[in-house]
Each structure stands twice: as structure tokens, then as C-alpha cells.
Length: 160
Image (cartoon, rainbow, N blue to C red; front, side):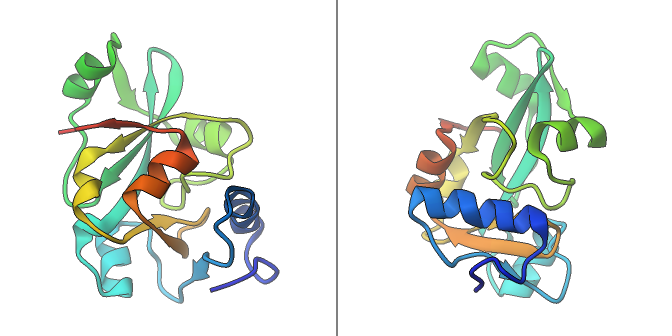
């Protein structure tokens, strides 16, 4: 775990956001990439479903952060229907960076330049400990479902 002093800048922003939330000293820098849920699960020795993937979509032209279980994909048509949106598509890398200040594979649930509308996959509730990206592809932090909902002000939604 780290206090943020030796972490990359994007991860330090996540550390600061977590500290404001009351969750201190959690972001870890791993020697191997955690860009994919499978890589993260292997590095942490946990089930892939306990990885809270941070996926950015564009929903009717606005960014939407979807925190989903690493064990499945987001059904964008179903999600659009559940959220009352016309169209949801995966965000382009530039759109992800503009919305979150972070790169694909390292998007954290917090630490963005401005709040991003967030939905949290109800499948994540099945795991007592979740792992979310810490702002870069090599940083990660532990949390749980209730805390993830609270820190993101997220809406619980089944996404597939």
C-alpha cells in the first residue's frame, strides 16, 4: 500500500480522492500490468469476477462510467434500456481521457477532473472484497460493493 508519494501522478489523484472519502492508504502499485481483469485477478490471486472493471461509455453523447464485474461484458442495448438512453457505445481513448483524466486499462472509479455519471454492476455485490484500478494500468485498490456505490455516487444496475 502507498500513501501516494511514490505513485504516478494519476494514482496520486486517486489517493487524494479516496482520502477525501475516508479511505486512506489503499492504492497499491503492482509490478505487473493489471490492464485487464484477468491480469489483475492473476496478480492479486482472486476471482476475475471480484475485479471491478472501470469501463467508459458514451450515453447519448455524455460519458458514463460502468463499474462491472470482470467476469462478463456489458450489454449496451440492455443498459440503454435500463437507463432510458437512446444509445450507448464504448468511448474512444480520447473520450476516456477527457472524462476521467486516466487511460484505458487504468481508469479508477474516483479521481476524475469532474464527476462522471456512474453505474455499478449488481453482480459485484456477490464478492466481499473488490479490486478497482487506481488511475494507471499498474495500480489497484481494495473496496467493497457498498463503498463503491457510495464513493462513486453510483446507481446499481445489472449490466448484462
